[in-house]
Figure 1: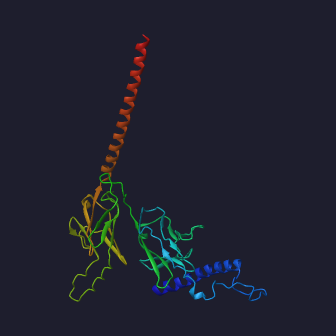
Figure 2: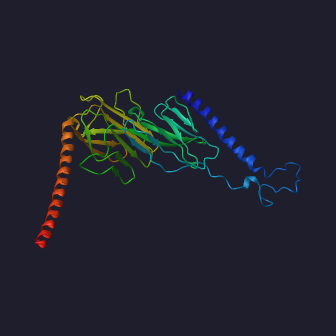
Figure 3: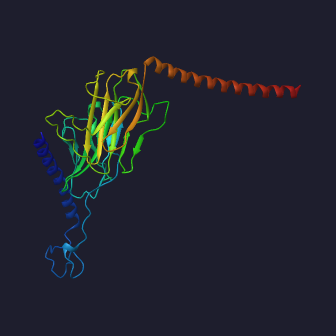
Length: 343
């Protein structure tokens, strides 16, 4: 699989490079060769391509290499929504931008060419914005979530990762706390956060995914290989529910944890299927090299959710009725004063 992906990327790079070189060649023909002696021109009539008697081409200023602009490293969306993963590269020159899906090393695009049969993917490279190489995805699905890499074929290869989370729950609809993220730092600069508000309100029966982002000042060590004494391997991130470690052997079932690492970043996703009111509580993301991050999950039954919505609508209606009654009372008083003056 890896060999096939590598060959595909090489072919895609050659195709994209030929496009870039053709454009460069056309631009050169338009401007002409300033340092050639073309069409019978004498050597003395043509200016050399560099100024100064002692300046050679090797001494000309070096062209700056490709450089990633700072963009969002985490994108959260809902199932069925269209999403765009950002990638902006300056000073690209004759290099080529490609998008790779990390979980299966599938090459999705190279330059503006798509190398997947999934027609939902496309590359956004608008005219007039040469640094933009965003990956577009129509109708995101939970299976699409994971790590995606924007790569440039330099030596060594340049990479910039974007984590896509496709979540079925409503992020930010909690009536309790307006906080968007919980971020915790320690003295070394390591940080852990769980995406979304600190208290999240979800519907009973839905599938919930909590995504924890961990950033460290130095790369995390690889987990040690399992020994022959059946010792438990060290995990990069642990998930706890009400202080108790969540495991795949939990009696609840329907629990999965997916953890990926990219340099100084670790992403861990805890997925809970078919949640019930028993899943209400505090969930903790506990990394190896950073302080823990905590969110509270509140699972609400359908009838309770409808009652909450109805109560809010009733309060709004009552408020509107009181306001209308106050306005009518003021108008009545004005008419009464006018009538008394006329009498």
